Image 1: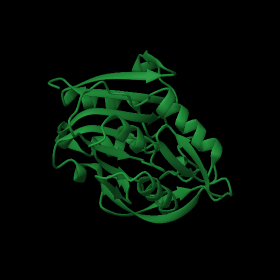
Image 2: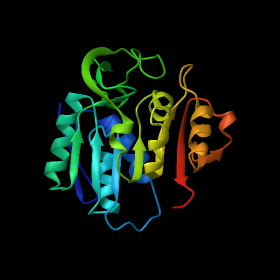
Image 3: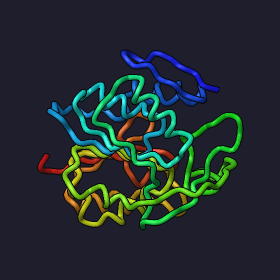
Image 4: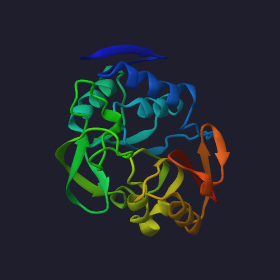
Length: 233
């Protein structure tokens, strides 16, 4: 069922009210992706764009930003496109692909229930935490490095438990990114320390946040946010 709500100057359409209010709190109230930079017209990658709340947040901060909104779930892309159109936003390109380590097709597991909890769609069959049902659909996959052929002012990434593989596969192209916020989902096959080491090797200053507090990466379990900034930026 479609729902709509005002969000500042925006109007947002969404399928799941509980999910919407949770994401609104994280993005617009807790400012998970706040960056104190006076950009003119930044180029931003919003990977795991979902229905577009983070894209709206970035366009609120920098109205002339150029946003590449990456979202693999075709059901969610419908809402993403509607929210862009309704709010008459420009300079946003939707890329309906999953980030993986290679170009091709891959199974994305989406919520098969009537709840339409689509922000947890994952390349893992039971979600990143192995706790939810999933229906596989085939979607195109592209490595992140394909989007890093030019300078990127900000990378936001929330890709539900494949951060390690996707980031490490970028190699030296990750240096095209000046600033990043990566939602980390701890799993037995997705580890924080290799990501921190990789980013540090590529000249990023890295901090890790959990429950609103900066923390030692060694102590992190579960969800965290990796914040990275190129040292010369």
